[in-house]
Image (tube, rainbow, N blue to C red; front, side, top):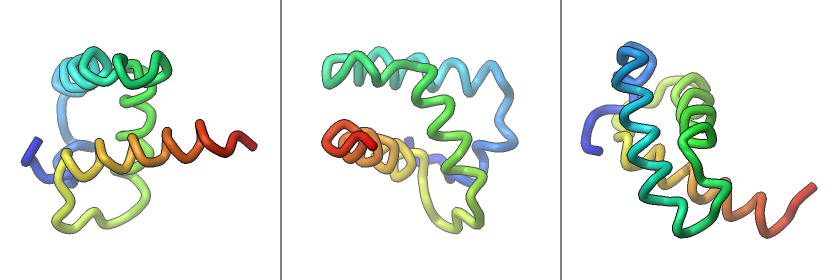
Length: 76
């Protein structure tokens, strides 16, 4: 989780699937919507929005959790 977020776009698909599967399994207890597909989509979007500078994967996962909590609280 301490890997730099800037490495995400260059990671192999196998590594991405492995990571998002682990996150989905760990976070489904918080919400059934937090599955591997959610994390794959969120991490892809977060990593591609611009220069991630010194962000880590941990920071990106926390961002995804915050976005999910916000969306669950205030669905459009």
